[in-house]
Length: 76
View 1 (cartoon, rainbow, N blue to C red):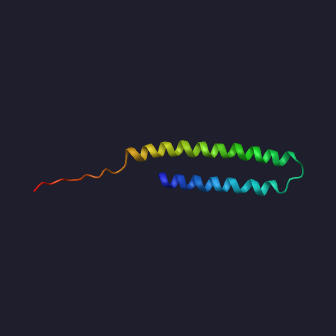
View 2 (cartoon, one colour):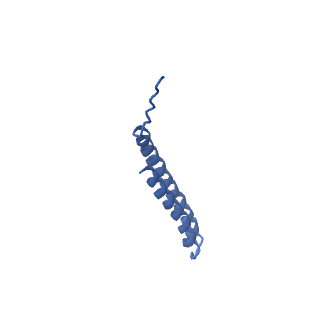
View 3 (cartoon, rainbow, N blue to C red):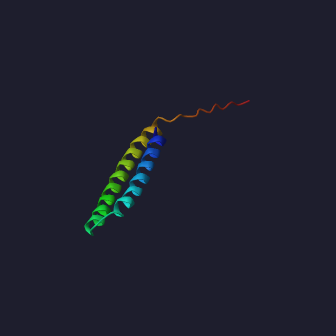
């Protein structure tokens, strides 16, 4: 679940970074590219915050529920 979440967030981040470049090319005035840049920055921060919080929560859950290896030591 932890790796799946991080993979999904990485895909979402890459997809979010490639789309604004396509939107800016068809603008007609100066305010549209500036607004797209500002919106991209806000969206990027939201994605990174969600990714960080989700990774922290899932990472803690993964750490505390991981399989513990038991080593038996025998003396001859």
